[in-house]
Image (cartoon, rainbow, N blue to C red; front, side, top):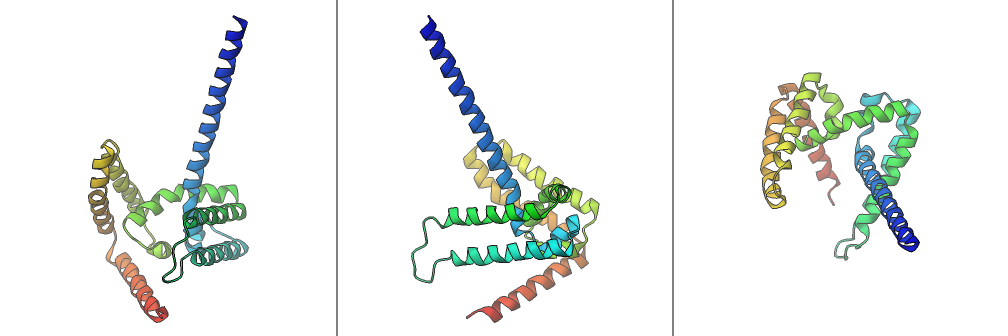
Length: 208
């Protein structure tokens, strides 16, 4: 009887420990996913979100520049076989940059950026380049409607079976992109168009 009790207690302990570890791992995964975009958000946009000091701007710019160079170094040379571990290395480099950036920010700044991330995801859905977001001067009403459009699409996809959800994803995102673009004024569209044209010209000049 005593032996059975000990076995039962041990089993419960293992189960509780397993649940705790699993919950912690999931929490860390969610945190990494939520923080990941910070390393890719332009400094000007971060500044418009949480007002960075000159020293913070320089530190974050240096971190992002180094990340860009490190990620570029992982690209295989022309004709070479890709590194099978490159994807994990990219994740590790990005997460390291995120940690460094978060260490530069104050708790209040981190919270302001965290609250802005859903909007940035919505803008990405509309393929709006992040470097121009600060120049668009979006109104609060535009931001609210953009978030709602993306939320509606996700809600429609949520209850579908995996295979059907994948099939509907492209259609839903295309519809959301059109609605998001329709929310922009002509002046805002002109800002985006100018940026894209300048970016294309820059890419042509840098092409070997």
